[in-house]
Image (cartoon, rainbow, N blue to C red; front, side, top):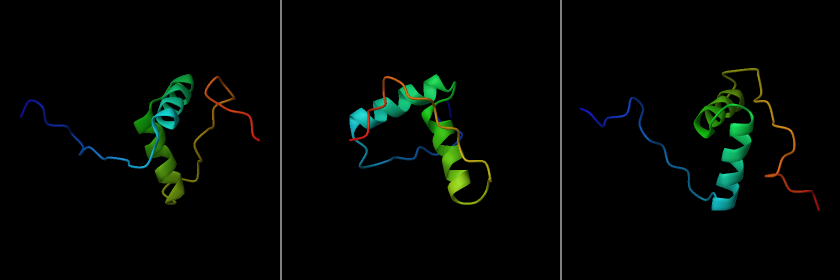
Length: 66
């Protein structure tokens, strides 16, 4: 079929729009995208990988700690 994805679409709930936008900007700054970064984190978190995802340097999306 023409519009069938190779992988099923997974939804994430409870993530506000601002966080989602900041995450997208941070992944782009790292030369990646949200899906690839989330997959990398999930593989590390479940023990499939020993390599934790690299965190981007502070940028316009980051906010100072209070």
